Amino acid sequence: MTDHHIARDGAHDLHAFIAGLPKAELHVHHVGSASPRIVSALAARHPDSKVPTDPEALADYFTFTDFAHFIQVYLSVVDLIRTPEDVRLLTFEVARDMARQQVRYAELTITPWSSTRRGIDERAFMDAIEDARKAAEAELGVVLRWCFDIPGEAGLEAAEETVRLATDDRLRPEGLVSFGLGGPEIGVPRPQFKPYFDRAIAAGLRSVPHAGETTGPETVWDALNDLRAERIGHGTSSAQDPKLLAHLAEHRIALEVCPTSNIATRAVRTLDEHPLREFVEAGVPVTVNSDDPPMFGTDLNNEYAVAARLLALDEQGLAALAKNAVEASFLDADGKSRLAAEIDTYASTWLTP
Ligand SMILES: O=C(O)c1cccc(C(=O)CC[C@H]2O[C@@H](n3cnc4c(=O)[nH]cnc43)[C@H](O)[C@@H]2O)c1
Ligand SMILES: [Zn+2]
Image (cartoon, rainbow, N blue to C red; front, side, top):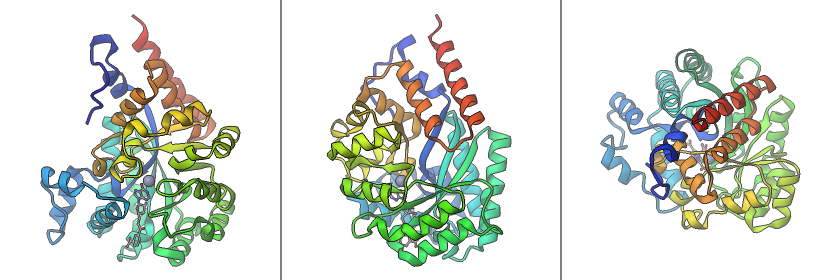
């Protein structure tokens, strides 16, 4: 899980720098973060599942022909989450994997509809994620916040249920900060979700839909104009529209770029063709993220290594990239300053001979 193009020599070992760099992650899915270790633990609880538990078999299983195939495999892992205890285990263990990478803060995208429709009680679901969130902060030093997303392909009924779960004061979890839209984009126009985003925004949630991952820049415009997006999940195809790039730059709308994900789902052909550099050159705020790390054979540290190569970043550049995520996050001002200061202290200590 390393980007082999970066030189690995002593003081200039960027991999070691990245490994210790305090980080924030803004685009990472709950179920999509289930590592082989977590999948094995869940499969042991539900031996009838078709998901392989052997790491080698899992690597094959997690090789995707296209985005639709990815979603099909993703849903087979969703089927492993059947009880509130499964939800709690998944959430806490995902935080443990984050802590190992020095992730201090993560906005984790959760699709509550996928769990409640499979029979998990909604109150028990919220209690499980909140219990895991509090334990992760106390025991692992990882601050988690939630983004509840509509699984777009499942339609307006799923949208209604998701916004209800996100805005009902009796259910809404304390850690919820944002509202998203995931799943396939082809055949799932963004504007139909406007009323649900309007309700979520009115309830104080921030808008962070996926857009421009598998369709063109017009989907990103729709996400901005109809869903009032404050950040864009992926936004890859924005590179095809100079006016859109200028708009994102002017309004400081960050892209949640997930390079390895884009290759794994075949949204982009090769890393060398990835538009990350074009975004930076256009002045668009960019953050790098892992999306569904074990499914894409990556982790956040590897995404930073990929970005270092594509953008020719040194340690200062990597620290600036980590601070982009802090700035674009939904942390409060105090939380942002503290994490940014921790990144600065780490970088200056590393660079002091
Ligand atoms: O849960 C179901 O039964 C169900 C039924 C119909 C449709 C769906 C979905 O559309 C689920 C999609 C699911 O995918 C998640 N996800 C993870 N990574 C990505 C990504 O890179 N781009 C878009 N979506 C992604 C998303 O959070 C949805 O939960 C489910
Ligand atoms: Zn995603």
